[in-house]
Amino acid sequence: MEKKMSDSVCTAPSKLLLDGKLCDVVLVVDNVMFDAHKIILSSCSSYFCTLFTGAWATPEKRMYTIPGVSSEMMNVIINYAYTKSVPLTEDNVVPILAAADQFLVPGIIRACCSYLEDQLSPVNCIGIWKLVDFYYCPELRKRAFFYILHHFEEIIGTPEELLDLSEQQLAAVLENDHLNVKCENTAFEVILLWIDHMPDQRQGSISVLLPKVRLTLMTSEYFQNSVMNNAMIKNNAECMSIINEVAEVFQACGLNRRPQFIYSSLLSRPRLPSSILLVTGGKNRSTARCSYEAYDYRTNSWATVGCDIHRAHHGAVTLDGFVYLIGGCNHETNLKTVQRLDLSSSTWQLVTPMYNARCYVSVVVLNGCIYAMGGFNGEISLSSVECYKPETDQWTIVARMNAQRAAASATVLHGKVYICGGFYQTYSLPTAECYNPDTNLWTTIAPMMCRRRGLGVIAYKNQIYAVGGTINGYTPLRIVEAYNPITNRWRLLPSMHYPRSHFGIEVVNDQLFVVGGYGGYHGMYSVERYDGEAGWWYSTSDIAESRSGLSCCVLHGFYSLAENLFPRDPLMLPNVDEEGGTF
Image (cartoon, rainbow, N blue to C red; front, side, top):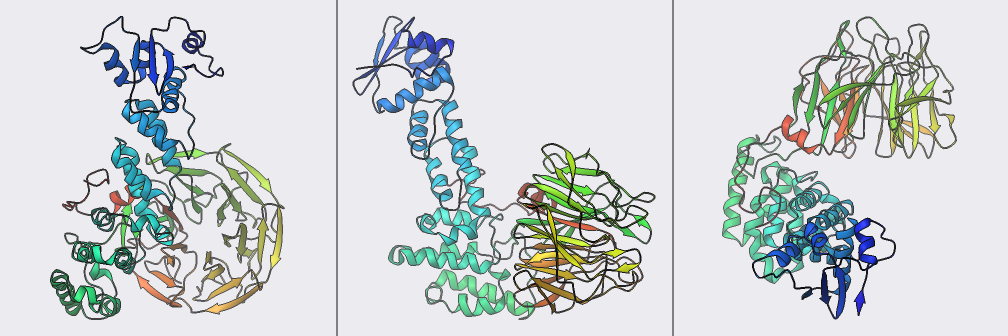
């Protein structure tokens, strides 16, 4: 049976093939014959180039029997040689990758890898990582491996593929600094889950896997109750040696104090943060300042980032790999300009300015757009709202708020924008409202218990938190309220340790952070975090420079940036190669 190319192919070489002109080779696969041109096949496949031009080849030979491949896969390869396209689906991508690897067709291999990369999910990422160990796909292998690390807690929810990892593969995951787990308890419990899947064969692996867990970074209570008292560990001499070492560290540090980080030891080495809290701009007294700081929640430490941009009382958001700084003021002027930082190249650029200057602006991101609300233009508080679309680099005016407000604060929850407080003329507002982008309408919601400006508003634990601020513009507050959109009611929560207004607020690692601000006399250094599970505020490391009028944003998934800002000394790890694959 003779096989020819699809009639949909219309390039010049493929037309020759369709017409059967100048064909100089016939490939026989499963009793199916494919007419083709040697030069076309050789141009995309070193296998065919060697077959047709190697030492044993003869120019007059026209017919070649090709074993070890189906006629369907050969048809895909020949079609690609003429069209440079390949029809990939979830069902055929693996056999096509295998055929492309067998016949050394790098173009198809790249297409398959790109397709598989786009399909990565918590359900299939481990399977893809293991699959590409059979083929030379180093970039896909690296991306699949890092996908596993960065989505590890999601993978645990559907652990079927995780349970099929080898001891060596699981060790490679657990020992990596990029492993994204909220706490080391998770890593330990995954080991127990993996062993319990095949206990007779895997119990001996506990001595290999336990040292990959950062045991000294657990709470002493969890370590004593769940690790030290585990029967499997107690019956393993190698594990008990590790346990005794860690127990001595806890004892030396005291039960209520965390051990110091030891970067040279896996047992005490902090993992890299999956998210970075970025502090932008602000001022001390009357001077807008330019230093930026980044926070590593794993080590409770700050790194100063150099920058020559001066803004205070502005908005800062992240969107599609950029940090946007919007409005605010500098030493002399209320600003309508917008600058953005390309995180991939560390370069700044101006984008289209807003229609209105907006100091004390409120800014959020929703559905791929940036909303700038209210603010002060030098004369009045504004009720107008502008919406920026990065793909068009244009601002458009959307529905006005029901109230004019500056020094308010806004956030997004369940697809809607919530804005609270602020001031109009000299009066601080208790009011709050909600914007629905589908209807382009603002709806007034229940007012806060305490009227205020310079507050921080953030979505946290499915509610709207309104934190701090000031009533009179001078005396800062410690108050915290939470709004439930279902009941349309506010309730009081534990107050911050320190009163503050005009501060930065964000959620990182499921903790609510407040940074700097005005403390009544000057800008503040202090930082606090609220743990919604514990229902309490905790002090964290101070920022390097006191400031108020700052704005915070969170960078998710910028792992190379985390490595640069918060470097960890390299370790000699025998289980992984430099691309994240297994030996």
